[in-house]
Image 1 (cartoon, rainbow, N blue to C red):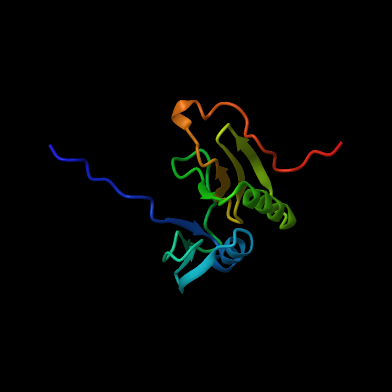
Image 2: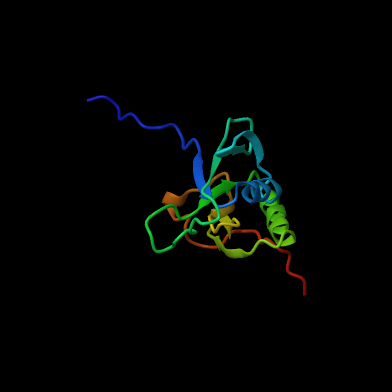
Length: 151
């Protein structure tokens, strides 16, 4: 029997929103994504020179929002290049009055959770280069803090 064929990585996510322009502003202004292609019925955005990592499809103002009691995607996670980048993103979320829903951490990573204007949940996170979740990395606290504690 040969090797199991599998994907090399997750290529992109497509989310549904009420207002395409409002979502474009959020994902470019808050997260810093760049529009790589647009059509009337879909918008493509990326963090790098790929064609896209995020596609956004408008449903119109009458669409209902996400429902946490239904099967579906829980959140989209965006990996930050450094812990300092995560810290800067945390400050930007606060400056843009984006509600931080929660902050989760363990010995290997820290993540900040927030929702877009339609309630689609996102996470920005940093993971240590030597993260070893299979060796107990889910336990403990991350070695750094988002904000400096002043006495």
